Image (spheres, helix red, strand yellow):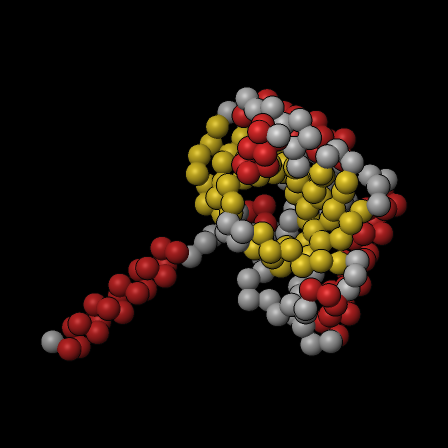
Length: 201
């Protein structure tokens, strides 16, 4: 009897763990990327519930390519320095995210997988470790070589699909391939909480 109970408990635990296992979509290219649950598909957008996650973030001085490359190099140097000091921040995660605030402030972020040993927040004045809580995010998928202009156009298209006023709403452009890749899966993210803020301000 005890053996049967133990077997039943084992099978239950295996089924629960299997049910909770997250299969990353193909566009993550078998690399670690933030987990989410698809809530619904609308016309021209998806509504996703993203798990809480950490990101390393640095400010981009402008929307010029040279400043974007400088910010990317800064994050790469940060990871190398911290890993040399005994931390384990991977550089091969997707997506790379550019956050646009008020249409003029730009921030570059890399995803930090759960369980990563990260340094204290004050370890580098130019790089911050962001903890983003679980959140509902509206997503528009588009192709082509990613650009600031393309991100802005697709953010407007996403707002139109949502039938929302997104004036001055913060949005994120997420890329899942190298700039030189022959094909691209790009996304625009708008957090539901940011839309609510813009409509009530």
